Picture 1 (cartoon, helix red, strand yellow):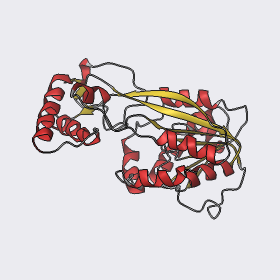
Picture 2 (picture 1 turned 90 degrees about the vertical axis):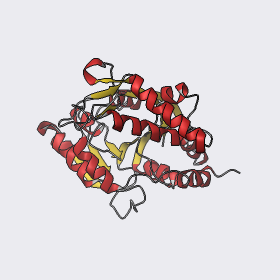
Picture 3 (picture 1 turned 60 degrees about the vertical axis):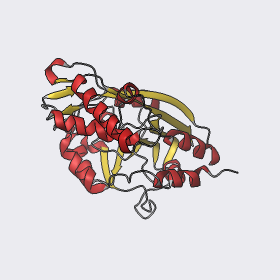
Picture 4 (picture 1 turned 90 degrees about the horizontal axis):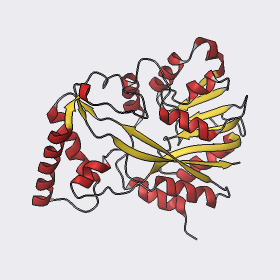
Length: 290
């Protein structure tokens, strides 16, 4: 029988290493000064369909995109993350009237959750929103399922990497190497005996930059995610095409307007330039009863 957990290990280690806790500590300062709901978080919670009074374990909670609206709706939440700065940001944005419903825990996927004090069936529902970044996805799914009393809800990338613009690559005659994270999670959950269901959340975001040169370099880097080998004269040609594409699509931010699924990070809010085509990507919302 194919061991999808072992196949995932090989897939994971073949990629760029995930950002560590120190990098996410830095990013905690880049979020908007106060939490506001996003299209993504509202759709996640709609699909999660929490029952009144249910408790939530939110693994990889970040700045509280799901934890905060949950406590605002009266749910008790244990919000966990490996970034202490993200946990502080989450606590800072919780309304005082709901602060008693939020508990935070410094925790990583590869930690021993038993030693960290997480009890079996301690929360009604377990969340992992865009946060499963570990070589041992089988263990991650097992851990979430042990914590949850009723069900687990997780989102993973489906299709192209969220680091690239499909429209940009298509215009250059290229395609992105697909990211099969969701397919692996689905298969591993089945092999562990669960019956996962899948729905999809579609996200979009604008790319904002301080200078034209910064935008060009960011899009040139996207070429590394393209299918096939780009090298030598072919790579140089595509790099030139990438810079020309940015020149054609980079406008003053005041002239670009479209709805984004996630709030604009504070460090990007006042940047003067914006690509006029948003980056779009899909997240597979995978849930299973325990």
